[in-house]
Amino acid sequence: MPHHTSMTKPRIAIIGAGMAGISCASVLQQRGLPATLFEKSRGLGGRLATRRNEAGESFDHGAQYITTQSPEFSAFIDARHGEGAAATWQPRISDEAGRHHHPWLVGTPGMNALLKPLARSLDIRLDATVTALRRQGRQWQLHTADSALPDLFDVVICTAPVAQTHKLFAAEPSLQKQLESVTMAPCWALMISFAAPLDVDFDARRFNDDDAAAWLARQGSRPGHVEGRNAWVMHASPRWSAEHLELTPEQAITVLQQHLSRVLGRELPANRFAQTHRWRYAMTVQPLGQPFLANAEQNLFAGGDWCLGARVECAYQSGVTIATAVAKKLGG
Image (cartoon, rainbow, N blue to C red; front, side, top):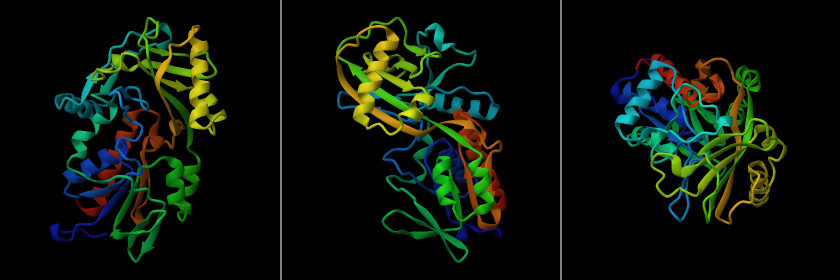
C-alpha cells in the first residue's frame, strides 16, 4: 500500500478493546493513523475487567494484578501512575500466594482504569460483535450477526481471543495452522459479597494443591475499592474450569461456594451478592511464540497475549508491535 497523505489516510479497524487493542490504537494514533475499535462487550478492558454491583462494591474478576519487566511497559505503567489510574497492591498474603519480587500493580479504582486514559481519545464502538470479514475490492467490510457494517477498512487488526480470531480468519489458510498451535485455558470466576466478615487472616491466597480453587482475593484490600471489605473474587483452577465449563451461572455459584467453604475449612457467612463469570479463554498455556500474525498482502493482522504468554505485558507488547508494523507498512 502506498504512502497516504493526510487527506487520504487509510481506514483501520481494530477488533477488541483490551490491552492489546487499545495499546495498538494508541500507538497508531501517535503515528497519525487513527483507528476504529470494535468491542463485543459493554465496556472496554477485556480481561482487565471490573464489575460493580448495586451496593457499590466492585470486583476485579479478570486479571488480578500485573507485573512489569520491560522498560517500555514499565514506562506505560508509570504514566498510568501519574494519571492516578494505577497503584501498587500490597495485600496480606498467605504462604500459598508466594509473592514474587516484582510489585503487584493494579488499576484504580479498577483494573480497566489502566486503559481509560488512553481510551478517551479513541473511537471505540461498544456492544459491537464482529462475526465475519468480507473482502470488498481492496478493502474489508466487517459483519455482525445482524448486518454488514457500512464502513469499509483498508487494514483489519484482530486482538480478540485466539478462537474468535480463528473464525474471523477462516479464509486465510496461511494463518490457520499457526493459530491452531495456540492453547488457552478457561477460568470460572466467582464474585461474592458476604453479610459478615469472612474470618481469615489474609487478603490474597493462591491454592496450589486444590483441584477446584486456585485463587481468592479480598476486594477491599485493593486500592480504590472502598466498598469491598466483605467482597471477594475466587478463581477456579484451569482444569476444574475446563471440566465444568458448561455449568449454568447458577450452578457455578452453588458449586464454587461449596468448594470455597471446603478449602477454607469453615462455613461461609451468608452472602448478599453472588455472581459468576465464565472466562472461556482466560490464560495462555501454549503461546504462538511471536508478537503477532499477519497476511501483509491482505492487510490483516492479529495479536494479543496469546502470542507471547499469559501476562498482561504480553498483550501490550503484541499490540505495540502490531502498530509499529502497520505504521511502517502504511508509511506513517
